[in-house]
Image (tube, rainbow, N blue to C red; front, side):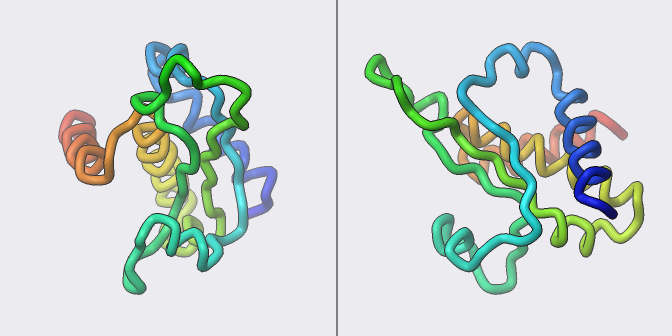
Amino acid sequence: MTREEFEKLTEEALDEIPEKFHKLMDNVVILVEDNARPEHGQEIGIRKNEVLLGLYQGVPQTHRGPHYSMVPPDRITIFQNTIEKFGRTPAGIRQLVKDTIWHEIAHHFGSDERRVRKAEVHRRHRST
């Protein structure tokens, strides 16, 4: 899949985020990179057998205070090669992009990993 095609999937996944969340997203950019670098995994304490599909870097909204200004944007990075490898099919890749976008946006809003995973299970059950 070309980078352009993958970025289009990312845009489509963002379009599926409910408007109430879009309106609340603040000072955040979405980027696509080929692969995570070793320091990415070290940064968040990922284990060797775990896979990094996306990464949130920044100041979650729940930690922003009255002095939050003149700060570079938060970064949500989606790792194309890893998602393609684990997605395997066009439909699988599309779903992983969507799930990864939701996951990282939840971190932007201040959810920790445990809470994000719980919300993912809830969201999956609602969509079936």
